[in-house]
Amino acid sequence: MTTTTLKGREVHVDDEGFLTEYDEWDEELGAELASQIGIEMTDAHWGLIRFLRADFAETGQTATTRRVATVGGVPVKEQFQLFPKKPGKKMSYIAGLPKPAGCV
Amino acid sequence: MTATEPRIVPNFGDEDETDRKLVIICSKGNLDMAYPGLVLANAALGEGIAVDLFFTFWGFDMITKDRQTKLKFSPVGNTAMHLPTGGRMPQWLSPFPGMTWVATKMMRKQIDDLGIPPVDEFLDQIVASGGRLWACRMSADMQGLTMDDLRDDVEDIITAADFMDISEGAQTLFI
Image (cartoon, rainbow over all chains, first blue to last red; front, side):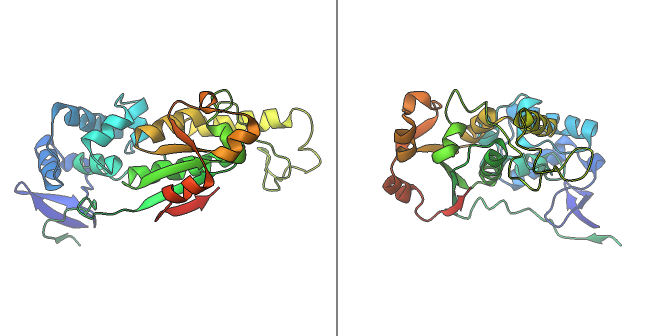
């Protein structure tokens, strides 16, 4: 187990820097994580991150871009606009969740 | 043992001016053989890799408006076909009337159960993610099809020589 300090708090992370403890995350940390990868959070970004958090709490898995579109209601195209190039990984990183495990 | 590390920020490769590019040639019109290309295209786009899909021969059914939702899966000649009850499906059984219908229905359900979209919706998603679709000139001519018969988001019907331009510097997969 590895920990690091974010916003003056000790948090558990994996080798790539993804948070590993669901409950250690809050929106203040999310904003910090976003700024680290150069993403400026807007309401649209937050809506999506909140969906990912709620969906993970329910299913135990990080939603794929497909699921964010069909269940979360944010079209894939918009996901690419909000989190350029690698939406699946970037969203999960900011949301403090593991990378999506599904293929689609 | 817990170790405190300096802050680790994942590298999403945004700064690397990667020109990694994938071209997938889709040449099959069977339901089972439509998916490998779609899954890989979708995964590549999600990793920031540019993707072009080139549809040729039977793969044309994947982008033909009135055929793309009707792809079939046949167990004929497939020795890897297993029965839900266990064991291999005998080869003499697979060409029986209705077997393709049953096998197709089962496969569609398995795909749907995994939350994976049908072919037409999958292509919608791929295009929304920035993927481009191209159709083969020779296949169009052989089947008497024009752009009107194809999905509206197909970029164009192109020749083999045009394909060489598109695939320049790309990793190419033939499926």
